[in-house]
Length: 292
Image (cartoon, rainbow, N blue to C red):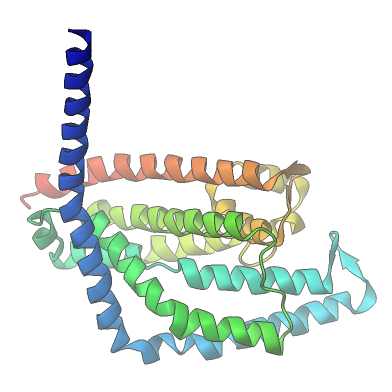
């Protein structure tokens, strides 16, 4: 009897696993199709993306001139040498190329024009579709934008773009990729209430870039401000993956190991996922409540 009972439980577990796989197959197929379609669509407009091959190096060259002037009277600033400072900006630029996202604009445009209605009739949620689009877009960006920029930074500016711990760096960039998507998508959801979100988007992007360490390293802020930034999710977008790439982390006098800070980054992704789900719950109710 006991052997028969164990055998039945084993078969039930296998059946449940098979059902889950069958449910996942359509979702995976949709993602694959969306990724490939987005890649092909943007392939036709790759010259638009190639503009960054000029903008990126020019912006970085500006940073070189500024920081060389700052370091002309000193060898270190906030514990960073000129070489380390330029390395920070080079790495953060590469990470921003990988994690770039426009989910906020895309969603608010669909809501404003009424195009979002068509996605409510589809078998997958729009967020899943939008994430798949981002993956396809960024895959194309790897060789159109990232690879040439990487070579320019490495050979022209002599920036060390080899991560101290490749595995942890890749994981941290992946988490940053998801976090950027979730934060931008959450801003896009506000269009259910505001319809046009251009002002909110610009204000948020400015605050995010400043709080994420994209403009200046977060260690340059006063200590009180650093303590506030430590508890905000924005540092996990740029500052944390950049520091993981370098191989050390410190903020507000707090030093963490790479596994510890990546663990916190994973927690930030979960928190942001919860925020997105709450906003979506109330936003979609408002959308359907006005006759959609």
